[in-house]
Amino acid sequence: MEEEQAMNEAKRRIINAVAPIRICDLGGWTDTWFAETGCVLNIGVYPYAEVQIYVTETAKGRDGSIVINAENFNERYSIHPPVDAYDRHPLLEASIDIMELPRSLSFEVNLYSSAPAGCSTGTSAAVSVALLGALDLLTPGRHTPHEIAAIAHRVETEKLNLQSGIQDQLCSAYGGICYMDMFQYPRASVSQLHLPNNLWWELERRLTLVYMGRTHSSSEVHRQVIDRLDRKDADKSALQPMREAAVKGKEALYAGDLKDFGEAMMANTEAQAALHPALVSESAWNVIDVARKHGALGWKVNGAGGEGGSLTVLCAAEGERKRAFIEDLESMGEGYRMIPTYLSRMGLRRWASVE
Image (cartoon, rainbow, N blue to C red; front, top):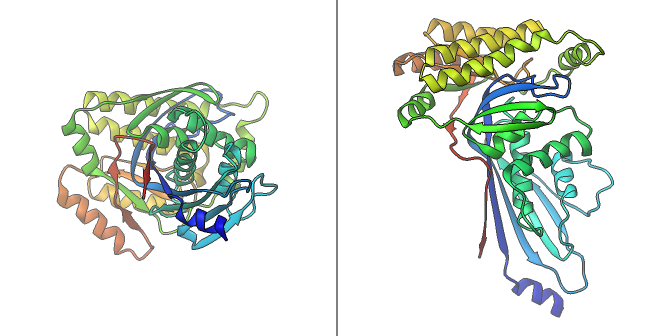
């Protein structure tokens, strides 16, 4: 009874962390183990993934408890490290398991993202980066954002045995407009492009994230592409136009040339279709047709491509043309909708407060 009273009277710390999702990933597919080397230019945006951890000290001599509240799924449950199996929300459970957390703490982890699941915008990576960044404040020492991205990548590839590139985690860690030079998988240098405010604001105003009405689901198509590229002596020349699109996109933004940037987006989407026609779905082509009708400068199927997911569209300079594009899309009755985004100048942010 006295122990319970002591716990109730203990101060509760709140650990906060947020990390952006990413759009417009020029050079995607080249950040993989089978590509070996690659170049990616992508853009970190809000809405971000959000994590809060409510922490209390346990009574002396007792191990702490861990509660996961996956708010988007309306699921709240307890886990007890070390975790033998990741069976409810594997990414969350594996992220907690990989960190060496003090056993004297009890905490509840609350996770939320307003971006739809399966949107092809790196939402899972953003959640993992935010969660690991928050948990890092509970352990001795500190990891840099780059190190947090590397741990998030290890969670997927080592803990969960999933196939994963590196760009999503790095963009969530760094934010902004990121240029990544992967010189040897999974090692990469990352640079943020620092653009003048007028170009930043114009890019933010024109970029539109179009959700295609259903979650991304193309594992079989992706498996076919990977099987083809992961063979001994495989012809990987189809990846080169994507690397070139990332470089062209970087150079266009530094030159302040949005027309050239749009052309890099379109070249990357064409290269995805050349890699496998199903990577640019019929729904995506429908969106592209409407975007072209309203004078858009470019479009990029987000992520690896396939059914569902989303596109990034670079709209025309005139605001009325962007609004007409959105109105036309939403009137088509296919579930297309816009997800409001804002360019994120920062990546992972984490801080602690006391009630």
